Amino acid sequence: MSKVVLLTTGGTIASTKDKKTGLLKAGVLTGNEILSMKNLLSDLGVEVEVESIFQIPSNCMTFNHLLILKEKIEQIFKHNSIDGIVITHGTDTLEETAYFLDLTISNERPIIVTGSQRGPTELGTDAFTNIRQSIIAASDIHTNGIGTMVQFNERIFSARYAKKIHSYNTNAFSSFGYGYLGIVDRNKVFIYQKPVEKEFYKIVNSIPIVDIIKFSLGSNGKFIYCSVKSGARGIVLEGAGRGHIPPQAVEAVDFAIAHGVKVVLTTSCEEGEVFPIYDFAGGAKDLQDRGVITGKDYDSKKARIKLSVLLASGIDDIEYIQKCFLR
Image 1 (cartoon, rainbow, N blue to C red):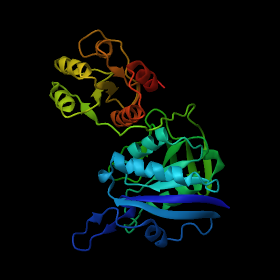
Image 2 (image 1 turned 90 degrees about the vertical axis):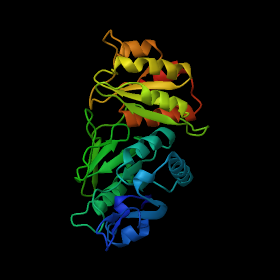
Image 3 (image 1 turned 45 degrees about the horizontal axis):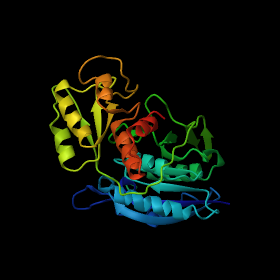
Image 4 (image 1 turned 60 degrees about the vertical axis):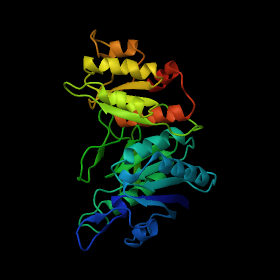
């Protein structure tokens, strides 16, 4: 019999409705309380061990929580009897947690992160379907070697490209330009594609401050100055198109780099990557020449997670960080 560990961290999937306000209170239920509400597992032939790690809304998630979760996963994987791990999580920061774990857990066994858009007591809830299908995926041999995945609404996504695309619909996650890795259809897992490369970085230092700064028409560099002066060790710039920011922000970029801050350039576009093809101030080529790291096809949130992990793993060389972002 397969054995899966279910770790719960709170979120909508662990919510109850406040009788006075009618609003959801996220993260109230423990894992055992969630499972007791529905007979999910009796026909699966999978042994499930449940442990509640946190009971918080996912907007409360921090890097300290992620480090605790990572250490718990590593302890669990010391036991060869465990086939995989499922983590329930609030959807707001789910994609960031999943990618952090993907970069920092080296084990070949699957980690599936899931959640729900509707609480378990709400009409039409997706909580129980997502939990059940995640357990099926975590216990299936075909998900070995992929790394951390996001399972939602029958689909399995790579942690690197999974993105929340809808604020309330149950079809909440997608991977623009790359699609999903596979599906869970009833009790069967079908994997259609797998990542060709798995990255792993060992955390040896504390997680540094890395800020995201988004640019739009007429923006300037004031937030870059603020970020540097408040102690950031990294900044992710979210530019437009192929990676462009307004020219009036360039001086602030120089200021950041002169102060040893690692700066990564990303694009606000859902598809395509940063690439130096234009010759103007604030363009990707101009920024690259100033010492900015180009962020390929990473969105700003994933780039922040990756830069944070790289810096915490002791990697400080700009050229090496650039190679990591081109993977």
